[in-house]
Image 1 (cartoon, rainbow, N blue to C red):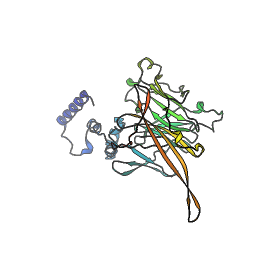
Image 2: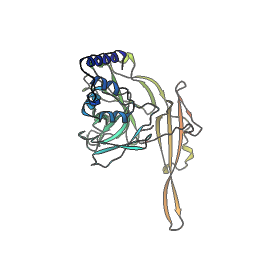
Image 3: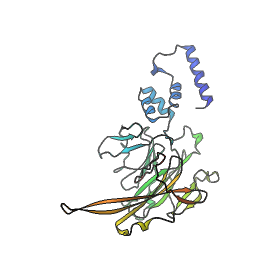
Image 4: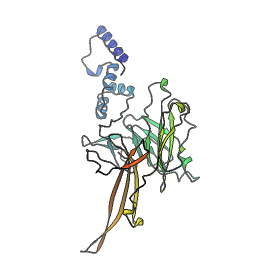
Length: 339
C-alpha cells in the first residue's frame, strides 16, 4: 500500500477515536483498517482464514481484489483429481503436507466435463470436453474471465471434433484492475494444442476494452520462440513482438534406443527456481520381463531423461551433465504443467 493510503487510513482512525471510543470487538474494526491488515498477508492459507472470520472481513477482503501470486520460495499447490459428481475440489499443500478442500469450484461453469489444462498466478485455465469453450477461473475468489472459441484452430469444419489442448500458460497475472484508469493493462494466454503434432496459439485480453472480436493467433512452426508481450511500440495494437527463436537441441539421444517402434519420447519446458529455462527430453521404452514360475510376461517402462539449459545470449541449449536436483531442486513433469 502507498504511503499516502496509509496516512489516509491513519487520519480516519484518529477522527473516529475522537468522535467515539475504539470498539472492543475486532469484528467492528473499520473496513479501511481491515483492508490494510489483509494487504500485509502473503500466505494463501492466511488470506482464506482471514476472510472466513466474519461477513464484514469477507466483504473487505473481496474489496481488496487481492491476487495470490506465489513467489519462487513458496511451494506450489497440487490440485488432486476428484470424481465427476463430487462437490469439493482438493488441493495439496506440499509445505504443510496437508489437503485443503474448496466447495463448488467448477459449479456453474456450464461446460461439458470441464478439465484444467494449466495454472498460472493462482488462476486455473479451464476448457470443456471438446476444448472449444474455455475460461480463466480463480478458485479462491470465484472470478472468471471467458476466452474466445478455439473452433478457428480446428482443421475440421464440425464443432464436435474440436482441438485437443495439452497445455496453457498466462503471460501475467489476469486479476482485473481496480479502476478503469488502468485500462491499458492486458495479459496473454498461450495454448499448445494437437494430438500427434502440437501447435501453439496465443490470445491477448485487454481490460475494459471490447474483446468480442478478438480471436486466437497461430504460431506457424514447432520451434521454441521468445515473444515480448509488453513491447511499447505495439502496446496500442496489443500485438506481441518476436524477440528470438531457439531450435531443438542438436544432439538428442535417439540412438540409445535401437527399436524406435517400441519406445516413445516427449518434450517439456520448465523454469527452475533460479529462473533458468529448462528443456527436458524424455524417452520411455517398453521392457518385457518373463516370470519363470508361471511364464507370464510383465510390461514395464524404462525412463531416461536429458535436461538442457537455455543459453539466451548464444541462443543455444546447454546439456546439464550433473544430476539435476543436487541443490535440492526437483522437476515435476505433468501432461499440462511443469514446475
